[in-house]
View 1 (cartoon, helix red, strand yellow):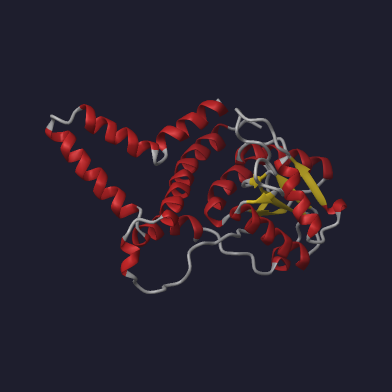
View 2 (cartoon, one colour):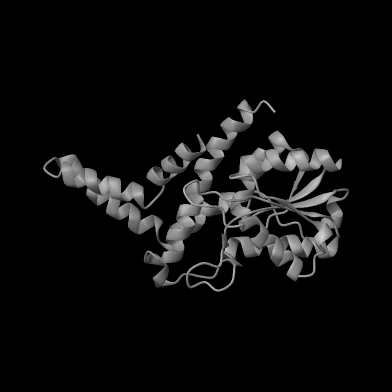
Amino acid sequence: MFVLKQFLKGLILPPTSWIIALLVVLIFWQRRWARKLLFATVVLIAVIYSGQANGPLRRPLESRYPPLLDPRGAEPYDAIVVLMSSTIPATGLIPFPSLDEYMFRRLDEAWRLYRLRRKPIVVSGGHVDPFTPPRNENQIAIDYLIRWGVPKNDVISEPNSRDTFESAIEVRKILQQKGWKRYLLVTSAVHMPRSMIAFKAVAPEPIPAPGDFTLSGDQGFSPLDLFPSEAAARNLYISVHEYLGLADYYWRARSYGG
C-alpha cells in the first residue's frame, strides 16, 4: 500500500499531472474541447506558478498553528519530537552528509526549544524510497544535533517510519516505553496540520511547535511576481502534497484502530 501511494503521488502531483493533460490534448487535438483544455492548462500554469497566487494557497496551512516562542508556557511536557524531512548522504560528488533546507530548519527549531528547556529530542523518520537502499538518513540528522551541543543521551533515534502516520505509531511506542505523555511536536509549519491529525489520533498529547515558516509579511508588489518561478513551483508542489495528505490522514485517523 505504501509503494502504491508513492506511485499515485507521482501521477497526481505536478509536473506529471500537467504532462498528462498535454498528452490528452495531443491525442484529441482535433476536438474542440482539447484546444480549450490546452488554453486552460497554460493559463492555470501561468497563474498558480506565480508568486502572487502561491501565497494564498499556502497561507491556510502555515497559519493554522502559531510558533511556540516560549515552550515554558506549554509545560509540563516530557520530550521534543522532530519529524524528518530529507538528508543528503555523502555519495558521488558530495563529500559530506548534510540536510536539506526543510530538515535544517526543523532541527534548528528543535535545538532552540531544547536550549530553552532541556528535554530529550526524538528524531523520527527514516528511509522513504522503497526502490533505493537505506543511507542512514536518521543518523545524519542526529549527528547534526550532537555537533550543535546536544548530549548523545538526550537524542533518541526512531529510524523505522516512512511517513508521518508511521512516525506517530513509532513515536507512541517510545512514549509508552519511557512513560512519557505530553511532548512538543516539531515540523515545518506547512506540514503541521497533517502531522497533528496523525499524532492526535495515535500518540496523544502532542503540543504543536511549528518551525520552517516561509510566508513573510506584505513586501509590496513586484512585476516579477507575475512570472512563474522555480520557488513558486516548489512551494506549489509542497502545498498540493499537503492538501492531498490532509484528505488521506483524515481518513486514516478515522479508520485507525491502534
